[in-house]
Image (tube, rainbow over all chains, first blue to last red):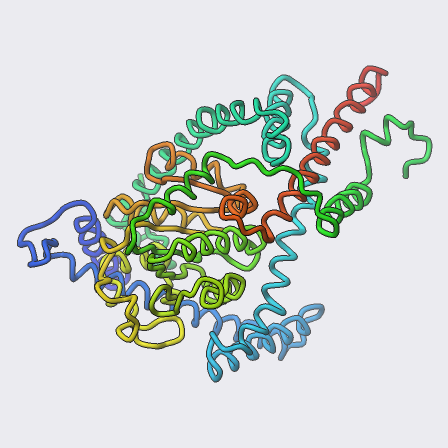
Length: 228
Length: 282
């Protein structure tokens, strides 16, 4: 396929879409509709709904892809894998059949969700508490000044998060408020601003065709030659 | 193995099986026999409560059930306590959507706990509704904010929205007085700031996993979120609402396990310092 089909047209679509959505977010472009919205409003509304449909489609497509991937393991009897793949497909089929024929809000669907997936996911997530306990015991050790500061701050925050302790030691509230509102917030703001600048830069590169990862595999020529 | 090790060396390196076993015992005791330890009300939880309490009659609240099954034990009790508060107050419309695919199931679970019809005389479709899972996270938030019916025309059971009186006059984000979000994902909790609070000025509060609170604080301190709470504070909300449930039980567990953790850290450090003082250790 030519560079036009593989790169130019997709980048142009991305550029126009991005400009429209951004313009609608930041400014009201004349001519203004009766509702006082920009003329881009209806177009962006349509684009957003396309986005929702595409996301929903990708969920179904992902399940289909999973089915194909694990079917291969079953047909090849991959060692230490195929039985798990078979079990996965049985579970997918069970959820799909009940969801499609009885509805995802039916009592039957809710029962299998609550009795299987919900119970398992809550258990797995909760078990992190055990790993974290062991991790805290081993990692929070004074080895130098930095780890000492880390330890002290960690202990203060741990103590504050134990609800009953703040009743007996009200100073924990003010100390943690300082750590949270001054130290954490300022550091977090720095991280967020840095991340946002990175996202902005990535967005501009994608819009202008300098970032081609979303286009799949391209040759150097299709990418527009090696970057200098 | 631990043969030939001194007590100090053993305390410095307690096997994880023992750490886990003690944690499990400390965890189970308050669940079996609640201790009734005091639960102070944090300023953020009080702000959240007062914000809902000050809503004028006829207000419309959008709720996002954006958490997954793994986060339910933490966020579920908070959502239930807040629903109790809203329904008890009365004359407030609650429209719920889900940005998490598991949201509708978890919402059913929460509503089964709240029992709005039996307990508060609320009616589905009149006082509250669930408009279902809407894929796309931030795109979904933006689309719902722009035109709710263009994004979804039915509730989560597939019944057309026009059949429900609660949906009368609901067009876009401007028709909502408050936005609440319970979530296990940063995309959701931060997305609502970008797609609703910034664009429409919607008043917004969120309840997230305790570990996510630091990432949300800059928004609260900038005034974009009225109050950020963690699901672990559900006991405080239940105390304010006056309906003790799972959250209060968890508060005892949280206090005891945190104390145990502090004990572990102190034991490990004291043992390491003594060991180092004796010329051993790293």
